Image (cartoon, rainbow, N blue to C red; front, top):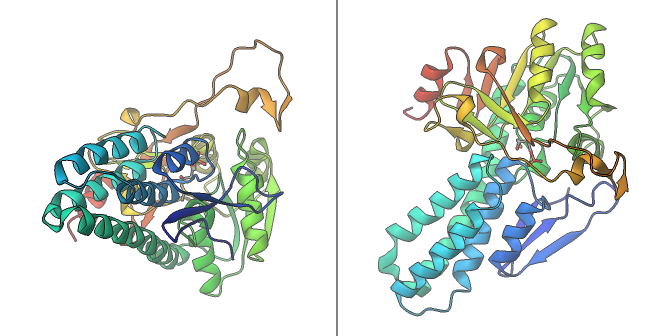
Length: 344
Ligand code: MRU
């Protein structure tokens, strides 16, 4: 199996997701600025994987700071975390990971610069290892909610979007490990094609039966009775259960509701932003127009055309049958259920 993000000999190694499925290339990053650019350019993507990469990027930056005293180190450290936080706005795991690294730095100043550097690398490795365990738990809890049949997923919320195993695809993997017979429909996921390039690649590699459809085929498939459940990941979940995920998720949720199909969201607690009360307040990344006007470098729309390219949308919680986390599945009312996750 491939490795999405790894720490190797004081470098960060990541599979270049922009080249998949044609080429499996691993890139080595030696500086935090390179890691920040890799996040921005979506070499690594998917909320939990972005969090892991950011934690490693911060550790890498800390490791290479020049100052020998804590005052100088703190100044350099602030610059590192600020750059990392400027990469992508929607996935809250990025900010969660940066805050975790900052908290470790603040709590361990007494270690001195050399000791703190070591401690920050340890923390980044912990974020990585925990993410895999969390995904497995999400898979275990979520797997129980799926019945034998077909599951539609949108975007890529798999091993490629996490440190391994995946959230939405983790639920599918969990169900299969529990002995269920599951086949997957993968939405292509225009414009960045995470579904066709990444989900289809990853599931095929894992020998999980997958059928690729374009985004506009989902309604037809549901009407035909060919889809039994939907499972997606999330980039940020508001305190009321509204879910930001890849653009197109909202349409799938509305379609699922119309056809009486359960719509599940799988995400770690690090994706839940209790500071955001309602989905309308989640910042939505707007990406470059070229992702819409071009495909593989070839223009597919007239030059000068006006374009909108929001990378995410928000699905109101009323469409969500359950939010599956490492601590179990939460159902309505979400405000109460999500809050309880942080106290138990
Ligand atoms: O723009 P991306 O590819 O980073 O968006 C990814 C998604 O929307 C995923 O569904 C989400 O991050 C969950 S990943 C486990």
